[in-house]
Image (cartoon, rainbow, N blue to C red; front, top):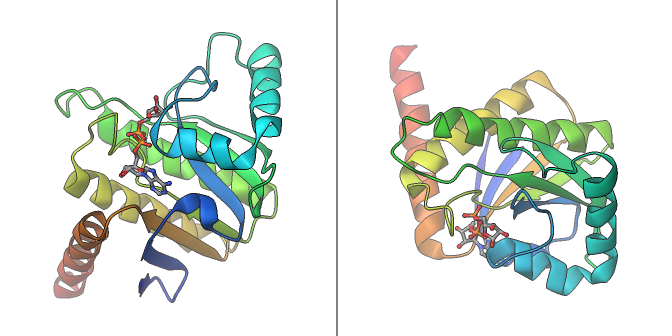
Length: 188
Ligand code: AR6
């Protein structure tokens, strides 16, 4: 476990579906109708109530699917989280298709929804770095920057947990985060 931004960003290793937090972020797809990875695990453990709400959201708000970079919110079902915030990360192509900006938007819009629902603790997975193939180092830099920026401007959520599924992914994130902070301190 490693803390950044005065303890408001905590990097940790584990299964995100086991987190006791106000909100868990789901790396979903545009259909909001489930899939593998984090998405599959969240629906499996959270039970069918989450999927029912996702279908309603599709019907009422996003008949063509949730756009990349956007986020929506449901309750947490059987999870130990009041809410699940569903966001759709970009599929990695070559880095020239606005992948960074879209991934950044996922973090920003997810945290914005969390703040709007007074969620003080939020757990976020490494969006787009699984099935969607985003390079993990680059995704770590985007995530660290986007979360830091949000926390700097907002008091809610108080704490964001970046939850990595493997120690290797966690170590990549920590190395990138440390390098960013080192570069910043050298500029000062
Ligand atoms: N807890 C924490 N992290 C996890 C867990 C877990 N239980 N399971 C996987 N990860 P992915 P994406 C990590 O593929 O790349 C789905 O089918 C995983 O190791 O879940 O955004 C959706 O329906 C990786 O580092 O999401 C979409 O179709 C990270 O979570 C598509 O995959 C993200 O991997 C989205 O792809």
